[in-house]
Image 1 (cartoon, rainbow, N blue to C red):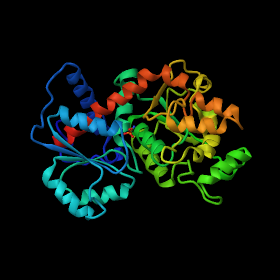
Image 2: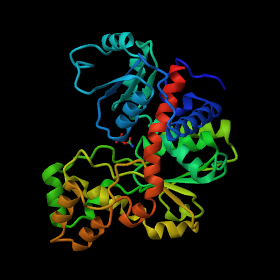
Image 3: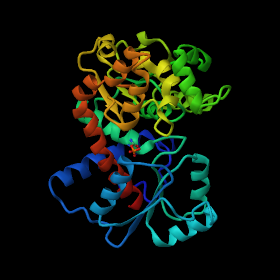
Length: 373
Ligand code: CP
């Protein structure tokens, strides 16, 4: 396949065919090999890359910036501009189109991204929106290919466990549907009131100092939204009807799983006590030694897109553990060993997890190269 994606936007995996996704993965392996061999990759000298980020990022931003530099491009990281505030999106996009060869965008609204591309004459790459995290999925698929072999994904069973919300479980489900893997989404269906009732009186009081009584936390629903389920089911029917797709709260569904992914329990933007009901809800779905044993697969792989909360060695985790310790020492001890993944499993699987992080760069470079042509 020769430069079939030149000029295309990269907004969601389902906009592409499995052949095109595999083309991007092949290209990622190729640019990784080049980089390891010290081959000069400056193919886009004189071109510029804009990273327009309306949300925080470590890996995605670094992967775009280093990829742009490796490819010889000038890069701009823009997070505090007039965009959408004191200037219309349409006008900003017309400005960017005149100065840059491609745009990487991260922001909370996919609907806005779809608006942005209408007024843009250069390729736009989705670096995470509330629809999907497609460049992350390429890095995960590449990592699994490195572990299992380039043709090793077909027929494997991938499980996303924990807080999938509207983006993560969906992104992995689309990846699996396109690449021929079974997908199991295991999450908690616990209602908010039940989680609240399981807190100790002092934890509830502390929680309500930050979240008023009668208020539902944002994004409590963990089931995949119906419209996203429909996209996944249509992709499986079209490309891999032989594969299965399950959403459940039953931990027995992890039997036979080949790889897990999980995500932090989603509270980085909130004060630590606001995490408490979510911890109650997701605690049984922690990726720990017992969960891995349940699979019956001694070679099961664990991925994590990061940042991970695998211990309390960070400000928010420490604050929370200190707060609960006097009243609930058992919870404090649990948190010290990890939230969504235990420190033990995280460190045991670190070789995969940090390879996955590095592969953000190679896969993003491949996407850039493909859309620039
Ligand atoms: N995995 C990921 O997207 O990381 P950042 O939020 O740090 O970019």
